[in-house]
Length: 74
Ligand code: SF4
Image 1 (cartoon, rainbow, N blue to C red):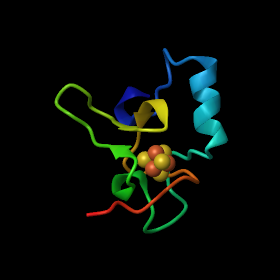
Image 2: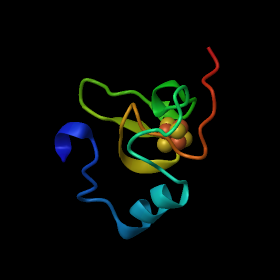
Image 3: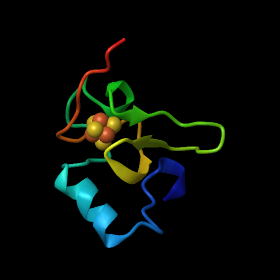
């Protein structure tokens, strides 16, 4: 649903397929690697409640993960 940023309503089949092909999971199976500390993560903003990812469209959970995870360079 909308509250946990997993609502894919409005996304094209292509966009949904893209996130699947990257192995996106709502909840990271790894303790330390998650979108929240990924280099490609786009944190929520005032206008956008959910985070995003530079690799595909649509909402991204801070606790999620995909196989393209890369450590953020501070
Ligand atoms: Fe999350 Fe993967 Fe995007 Fe990184 S690349 S922010 S792990 S979905």
